[in-house]
Length: 160
Image 1 (cartoon, rainbow, N blue to C red):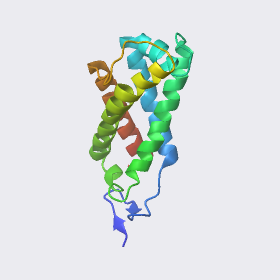
Image 2 (cartoon, rainbow, N blue to C red):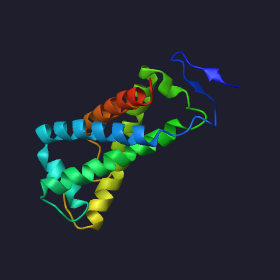
Image 3 (cartoon, rainbow, N blue to C red):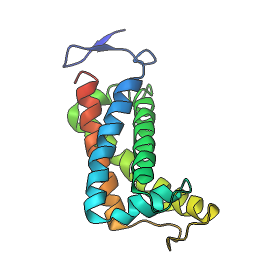
Image 4 (spheres, one colour):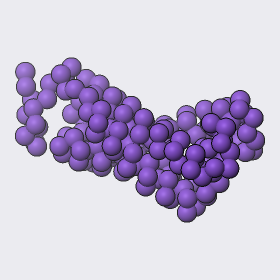
């Protein structure tokens, strides 16, 4: 049975589809915004930690490229999450999509930056003094911002 949303879109569970491009574009834009704020607050995060993941410690360009790739990919993952039959109508409302984006961003902050990042950096021999879990107030703020922009971008791009 079709369910008409308040925006005139028709969606059904299991047939809502995944907005891969929308997720990727929203993730890219969110990463640019987040990266600009990181650059103002703590440029070493991009230059040392993120670039160091790939053996380019000290390269701001490598840090930006890696960060943009990660953020865009996670935008695609976000689109996949919102295509889940239990969540397929979340993107019909801006506030729900933003809340979903913020939750997603905070999960990335704790799991990605807080756990995976220090393990990965240790494995490639980059010492940034990060213990596990490496959860900081700036990281939580940056990832919250990512989530807000991701949610807004996904909602707008998905026809909201």
